[in-house]
Length: 340
Picture 1 (cartoon, rainbow, N blue to C red):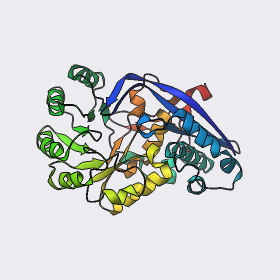
Picture 2 (tube, rainbow, N blue to C red):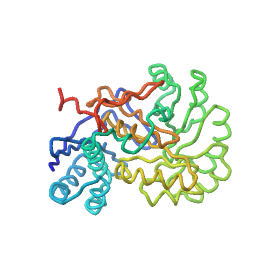
Picture 3 (tube, rainbow, N blue to C red):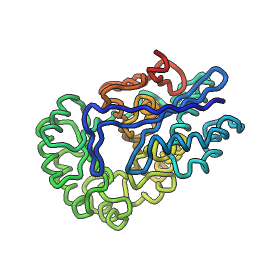
């Protein structure tokens, strides 16, 4: 077994702004696992909000090298378990390794990942297309640039309702809104009344992750469903979100990969909660991995590669009508500069 990893910079088509950060470049790290003539790829992007950088992700991956290359492991789940102490402070790095392990493992077995998981690729929900915070004219222009049947609108300003009212004048597409922890309980409850009238499907993480009392009120009185994001990072958070949110948004990068992500989805379903997987502006390596598990979900946000000025990989092709997987087995994505 051979472990290598690469750093790449992903230029965005537009400055991407949410309630607590803006960026024009998204840093990413690609992991490659090679064994017996096969190789698998995985990805994690960086995130300053969570303290995850290319440097500390690469350091964590290097710390795992001996275990990955010399310890006996057969399945991705086994590798995840034997490495979890190494990655206890860096689930982003573990995600990239875990994703590469799933790609390698299913390639060796001559199956696409969704085939191995016995999932129906025709059952994938439509991804939303995300519009970051900007002045209203630019947000409208972004919607016109990508005419999509479902949008996620980032909020967290002093005039959020006005933004949605203005955007609604330019499309009949349903909206999902994501405040990224920016509101109070009173705001969320009040806004939900008007947002429902404006054809908003749900609100994602309206309150700060530690405002449990506030979320109880929102869950009880909101006219719209609420989906956890920052409040649901790792497996133990799923049960904590029950009774506070109607569903969870699993980010594979934050959770530590596909292995724990699948367990989180299963647990949420047992609790009667809606399930969603979101992206962190990955290239087509990470986005293709999300697409493979998307048949399990009620909602999906896998538009990351669509937000890039230039993708560094080839993988799943997403249109408003269909999701087309690459021909190869495993996850099937390929880094452009590794194959061209």
